[in-house]
Image 1 (cartoon, one colour):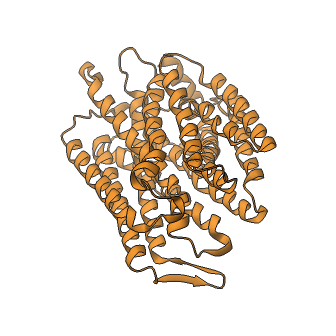
Image 2 (cartoon, helix red, strand yellow):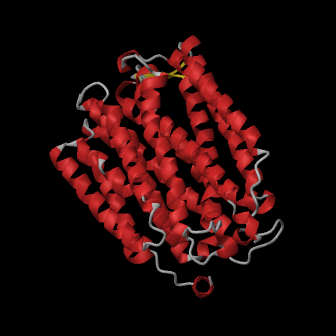
Image 3 (tube, helix red, strand yellow):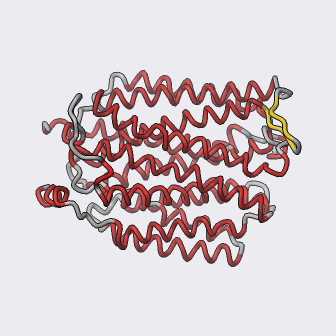
Length: 425
């Protein structure tokens, strides 16, 4: 790679795009509470389950389309793949707008069953959520390996990942208040209407369209050592690398607990009637913990990702147990601080020594993000069965134990080819 390719510009731009991914991902999750009122008031006893389908369809995009991102990088390069993903994001936002219009003007067009009904506009919103998840997945397939391999002077691999994820966390931190203070400004949660979604989503879609136009002029040098050339056949299955396969499983459980807490803590707070603004505050504190933890970690060029993963999972597990035992959600919100560095730790451990398999590895790695679809819905279903959210956090605790196991045993690189690449790097 030429020396001038290590300039700051591409790194800053991809960091900004990662901010958008975090911001819009959290906005999608934070709409669970308002849409439960505006779209699902007649959904009956399965209201919590339907509400968590918003996150399910978002992360379904990761499962079904993450691998496409890796293939696109091999065929078209990083820049073209990023532009395609931004186009998908615009389509998702426009579907959000269409869903709001459908519910506002055609609310009588509904799917009905014995105990309740939902408007067809909610189905349109779920499709938009799927496209938004697809876009976020492909953008992360681009950004994670690129930033990891982009040897910016004075930075380390895990440090670069922590820098971009810190900015991503800034987006997740401000998103809940954007939903509360901008989109639903001055409106009680019990009075939310679909009409209030129309203009904000249209404006956001327009903003992303402008960013996409600017992106076409951005110089984003290709990093050939991280992916196969167009038409090149890789000799091995990506699943033959043990530490990557177990890393995909670990990230499945990691995102499962991350999103379960981030998306459902406000629903639990609403159940406990903790007061106006407290649900949004708890979510903001949780995502704010990501911002604080990742920002602090950017000052450490070299740190041991395995030891960090072990330590943070142990502390997070203790906080979840205390929260369940005392029914004090402030302890649960504090988990975000310790979740903050887990992503970069698992990604760094999972992609050791993979070289030209890295882009494809990033694609399958992002498939594990589907955990963000499975566990929030499972938790919502359990909340409907138990009649309370209190003991549903046992699901998050199980996820922490799986990540701990990866830090203790699953991270080990046993492939001789990968071991040689690590030594020669």
